[in-house]
Image 1: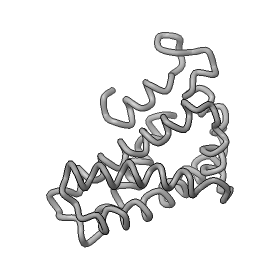
Image 2: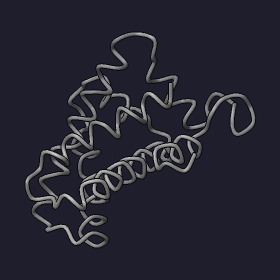
Image 3: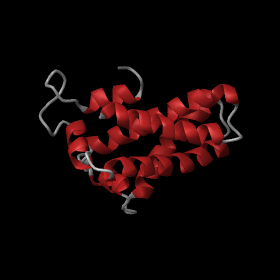
Image 4: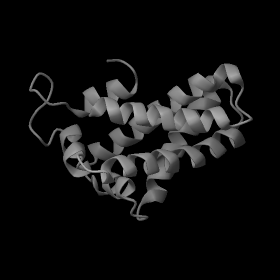
Length: 151
């Protein structure tokens, strides 16, 4: 299940980056990886606050609170690719504005298709299921490591 989510995020971010004409070909993979890292950082910040409603709303298609998530993701992402990869700030902002809605739409489709309960998944990511490392489930650290390609 988590592999499916991770792959979906990677593919969605990659499709936006690959279509952007202002991202040099030799930096497209690195920009995609930074998008995934920035998104996982944003998710971590939101789940650590204990208020999962922002993420639940994002994935359910509810328009509420998307600006807060967008601003957080955008700040993380723009800072990262401008400083690490030398991408122009306007290009970085354009990418950020394009990536999150695509990912949210894909995840909404995944969760609305049945078989996935975003509340339960986010609860497990936060550790609410009582199953952490070695407990048969997964925790936020495991999920973020998978998003970043460390597992």
